[in-house]
Image 1: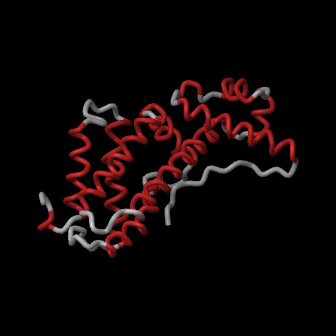
Image 2 (image 1 turned 30 degrees about the horizontal axis):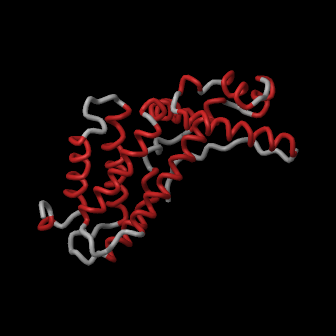
Length: 212
């Protein structure tokens, strides 16, 4: 089970207050989709949502929290899409094909979200997490991947334990994401893509299938 910290908000029973919070959440989502963390401020949020700063401060304990929540929801949606890719993968196709598809999907999502948004999340999530567990988000891919290993008809997937697969996926997520966050010159390049796919192949494939 993933240990990614939940980012929640104070519950309210008043319909007007619920509507206000829903509007603020939707506006935060729209701003995150815009990809510019410089706009992740109380002033921008209140202006775009059509509420006063006083109302915003009353509904939110921290403006950072609502943007982190919006980013996390986008991450969860992406992971659900990745899970579907694994679940629907043709068992007659080799591991290398699945890994290329997953890495391409990850790169596409990162480029859409933008490294600035990723850096914003990376810098601020520690404030709302008591444990160093923000890198556990890929754990949701473990179960569908284990099922894909069992379905494999190509003999290219290596059998692995649940615990080992968790570590492999967590490490790979860092391998893919950190170059974007740290503005490495090769981030998102064909070189970066090849490194990600090749390293996953070394970790997840049977030895005799590497280079096949």
